[in-house]
Image (cartoon, rainbow, N blue to C red; front, side, top):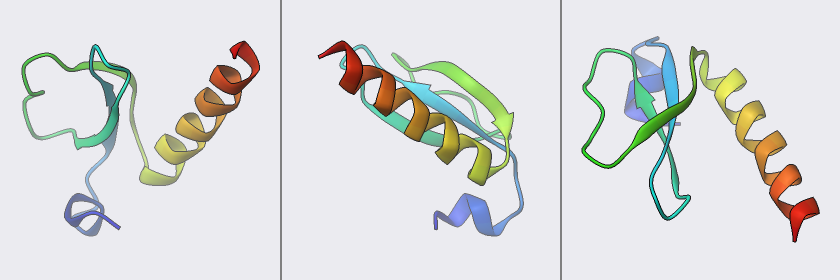
Amino acid sequence: MTPWEETGAELYVLRDKHRQYSLWPDFADFPDGWVSVFGPASAADCRAYLAGDRRERDLDS
């Protein structure tokens, strides 16, 4: 669990140019080079999105 999840904040799923992902709180600015690909949503929904995206990427390999 991230510290942001403990605040009850909704989260975004961010991705950078290297296809690295991060959960990011809705109250903070996105870091340079990162874009939102999902959210804002609950942490559980963000994790479900990441699990689905990973399955799709595995199928593309």
